[in-house]
Amino acid sequence: MNPVANSAWVYLFLASTMEVCWNYSLKYTSVAKIRAIDWSQFFAAPAGLYTLLPAIGYVAFGVANVFFFSKALNQIPASTAFAVWMGIALVGIKIVDTLVLKEPFSAWHVLYIGFILVGIVGLKRTA
Picture 1 (cartoon, rainbow, N blue to C red):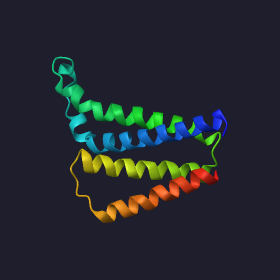
Picture 2 (picture 1 turned 180 degrees about the vertical axis):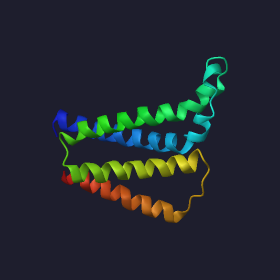
Picture 3 (picture 1 turned 90 degrees about the vertical axis):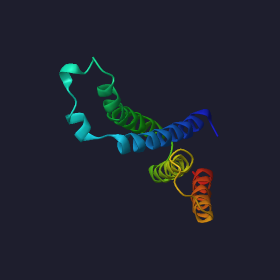
Picture 4 (picture 1 turned 45 degrees about the vertical axis):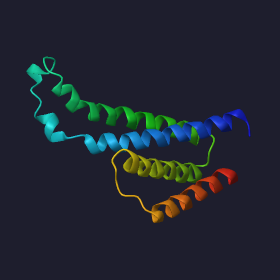
C-alpha cells in the first residue's frame, strides 16, 4: 500500500474520532443555557465560557470531521469510507459510553461490536 493511501486511512480514523467528539459536544450543548448567558458579564465569570465550550466543540469537531473525511475520500471509495467511518465512530461512542459515562455493557455488545469490527477490517482489506 502506498503512503498516500495509508494517510487516507489515518484521515478516516481522525474523522471518526472527530465524529465521536462531535457527538458528545452535541450531547452537552444546551441552547437554553446559551440563551440565558448574561453577555454583559461574560468575561467577569467563567460560567459563561463553560456554557459555551460544548457549542464551540460542536463547531470545531464538526468542521474537523468534514475536513478529515473529505481528505480520506480522495483515496478511498465513498461507500467504503462511509461504512468504516461510521463503524469506527459507533465503536468509539460505545467505548466512551461504557468507560466514561458508565453505561451498561454486556456480552451481546461485545458480539455486535465484533461484527462491526469484522466488517471494517473486511472493507479495508478489499478497498
